[in-house]
Image 1: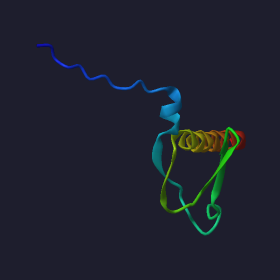
Image 2: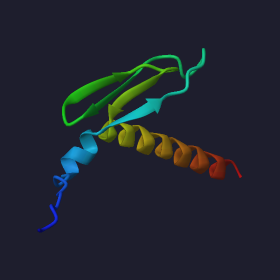
Image 3: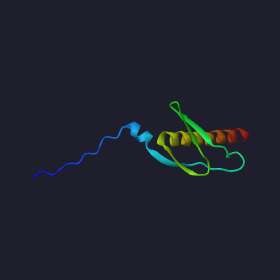
Image 4: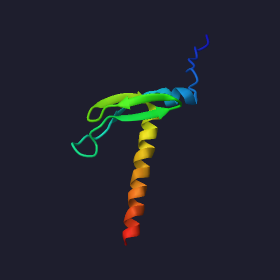
Length: 82
């Protein structure tokens, strides 16, 4: 007898980027109070602040990169003040 082999279906990069992941954006009553709109490949996603929502990984990556750019810009502005 031969053992049955189970094969996993191949995951494509598209599958990875479409996979839903949780995201929660901070909310306050000042600067961070409005929903955030993210556009990826012509598709708009409106993300509510203050609650955990499931979004495609590509949207989460855009939000993460945007946050990183904000931090770098803030560091640059601080370096100019010195």
